Amino acid sequence: MRATEGDQLVQHGRIVGQPDKVGEITQVLGENGTPPYRVRFQDGHEALMAPGPDCVVRHPAEPGH
Image (cartoon, rainbow, N blue to C red; front, side, top):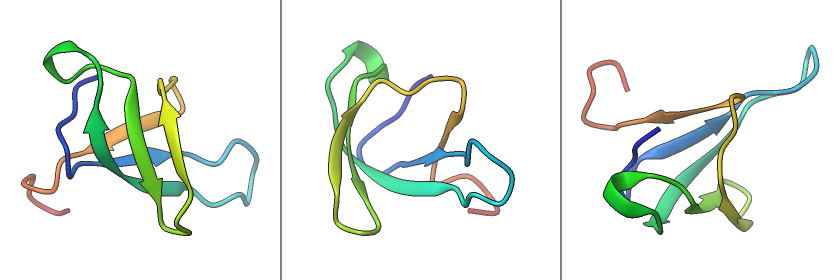
């Protein structure tokens, strides 16, 4: 997983009916875009995350995002 500041981190819901959590990556602390990331979620909460397999990175420059 690789990201840059401004990308979105999407954490998929873990149970049926639970919505995805979407946050903006505000800081990349690993080397060459690797985790951990500092993430600000839509509700204003910030967290330091080392995303697992339930997460994907969306790059805003990609078509369709």
